[in-house]
Image (cartoon, rainbow, N blue to C red; front, side, top):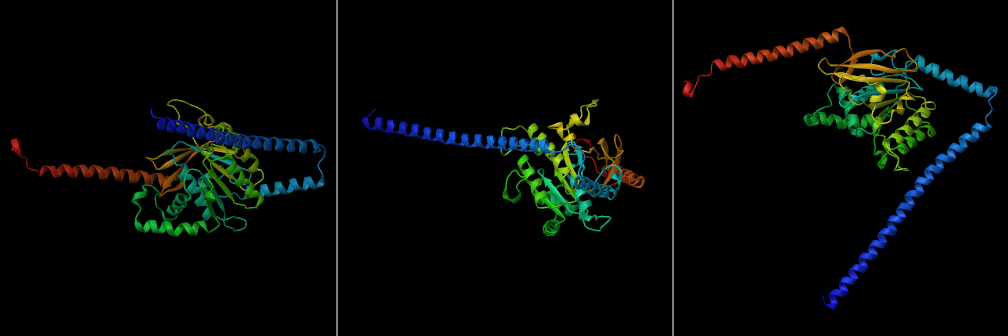
Length: 386
């Protein structure tokens, strides 16, 4: 090796060592910044706990003051009034089953492909066309989704308005696509249906992180932005923490469960949470709670928990009540029909119509086979069989 080559090799190694040292320093600085944020997050939580304990220490546990009693009476009157005039949950089939008014968290669970997104769209649509029975005021709905993009959700609503099935997107006509484009600004600007997805306002993690959900809840309370219902689609996708990236999804979901429990007591609207269920093993009778994917802690704050079981052949969905704190629905099950993308009451007339359509479909298949066989009779044999 020449002196020139030796010098170049030496300089190369020096530069590599310098780059490595720079990388180490950058990594150390980033780790320090990350550790600082985690510590600050834990410190903020600790300070909040200390403030709560201080309030508890200074609180009196004797007779309440007239002002405190008056506030309890006002809160109770507002709650009881809302319970007298509940909103319609999807359709009339849920009356007397779902406590669809303030201070309620309603959990809807289903396996993958069993219609959770369809249920969310149906619920939002029912609220969109509904009005307060006492005041005549139109309802406002907030959909917090980490399952779909907001344009998809608005398209689902348009499909319900027009009686279309929101499936096989590639098969939508030019006219239908124009209708989607026309309806999005109408729905989004109405103030009656707001959809927040995971990249709302350009910020990533709005609906999948505990901080994103908490910030949203705090903003709604601080700005007195009152919706009539909040729908969260769905629970299992709230999986991470921005301030504490090492937090696993189970801890994140436990935090969410506590957060939603506190929020429901301070916000004047029911909260609907969609959840994914594990498939039940054959001949197994695993409890509903065990089949919830992720943390089971969500069952603590919910006041009603229902399961969706789809029956595609008969165009119906079975709803099973697994928890009911304020209604007499515990252990009950019932059906809704499914027509043009909508959940409808499962009446005898509906069942007969589905059965008739099924018979007619089978008859068409049989007739088609007969026609094909008759056509074969006119075909002359060829070749060796001639």
